Length: 115
Image (cartoon, rainbow, N blue to C red; front, side):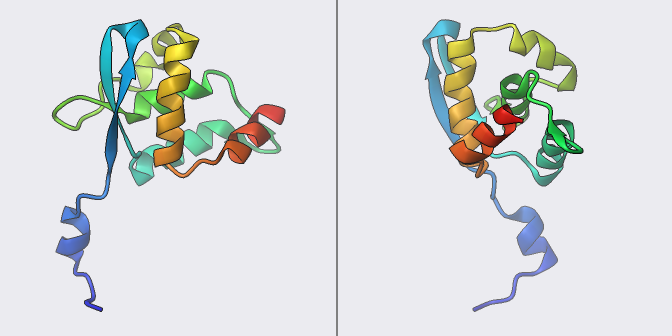
């Protein structure tokens, strides 16, 4: 097995994405895996000590995962509240794909929601 170089790692295309039909919004969105920095921010907002912050959780994750054709996020952190005001069905559909791409299991989400 070949050892990877710094360049190999930093140039690897390691953020898979998937297109999701969202009829409530009139089209399709592209959902990708979060970067390490984005995941750390999401977890930092969600796991606050002994309790879990599930407020606007779906929109917070979707905002970090919905990208444009250029591969860049469509929504920045300031857009999360506005995104949370959109259709719950549309957010759920998008969230489910983001959850799967990012390795969050249903059990992980259920545990958060219980707390």
